[in-house]
Structure formats: structure tokens, C-alpha cells
Length: 218
Figure 1 (tube, helix red, strand yellow):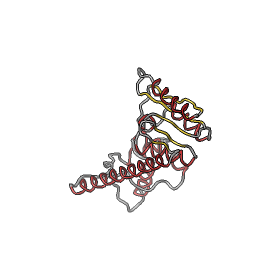
Figure 2: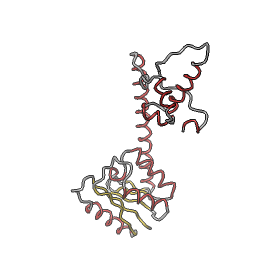
Figure 3: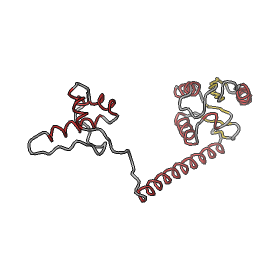
Figure 4: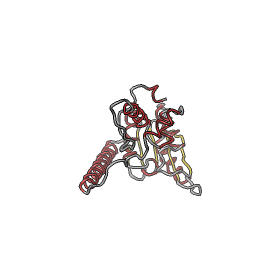
């Protein structure tokens, strides 16, 4: 059996040697071959970590049978991240062992423990969702605006930039509006320039349909 051992320290002055020795001792005791993956001076909050990325490539190539680390927070940046990693490992037929938290999915007890973590992660997501919904409802009840503020860009600005040859995306970047809004403003200006239509220049929102053809956005 082959294990991918993962260690991480957050600052350059820290040494991952103690973690690696603990992992090697464990793997030797179980008779597992092992390969080292280390992130040195890398925050656990970062989504991309060179050592972890390399470990995941190994796992996805089915070149490891287990992933071993000392603590949960060495491997995952959150409970939800841990559950996602564990779910991927399970789908690939790879076990997860976390020494300090006694998680070992090679055993029935360890699989049950990991299942409880997944339940807590789902509970945490539900709580966050409920708080967000409650906060939006309170804001609406107090008459607060939800979403982005109205745009102060005028149609004449957009039309002038379009006439100067800028693409809708270029106009959007220049005026800090969406390309879809830039397209709508030009379209509406053309419509209002027709006989029998009155013109109003200020823009009140950044919504509206997107262009129907990809080339119009160029």
C-alpha cells in the first residue's frame, strides 16, 4: 500500500520536520510505502498550494492508496473543504488518515467519524444560508437597497465610445459597467433617436438583456 504524506507549515521560519517524522513513523508501523508532499510557509486558507496540488495529481492518477496528515487544519482550509477532499478520495478509492483526530477511513469507525464531519459541514452551510436570508429580509424591512447601486453612466458616453470604435467589453472596462449594459444603452439610444420617441439620458440600473450575438460584444 502506498501513502501520500502531507505536511504544511504556515511561515518560512517554521519547520515541517516534526510533522514528517510523525507521518513516517506511522507509515512504517503499518508497512506502507510513502511519498512526501510539503507546503512550507503557505497559509492553509489558500486554495492553491504547490504541495497539495501535487498530492492531488498523484491521487487522481491512482498512484496512492491513502492520504495521511497529522491534523485536519494541515490539509483542509475549512470543514467543507475537508469533506470535499474526503468525498473525492472516497470516489477514487483512496483512504484518508488524520493522526491527531483519529480519522482513518480504512476502518469502519474512521468512516463513521468522517460521516459525522460531513453532517456537521452540511449543518454549517445551512446555518450560513439561513443567516444570509435573514439578513436580506431585515435589510428589505428597513428599506435598504439590495444589490448594486444605480449606474451614473450616461448613454451619450457609451454611444460616443462605440462611435470611436471601442468594443462593448472595452466600453464596459472604461466606464466600469457590464458589456451587456453598454450594448443596451446603445440599442436604446438608437431606438429613441427614431421619430416619435422622447430621449432620456440618465441610466438608472445595470440590468438588461445580454446581446443576442457574440460578435456584437466584440
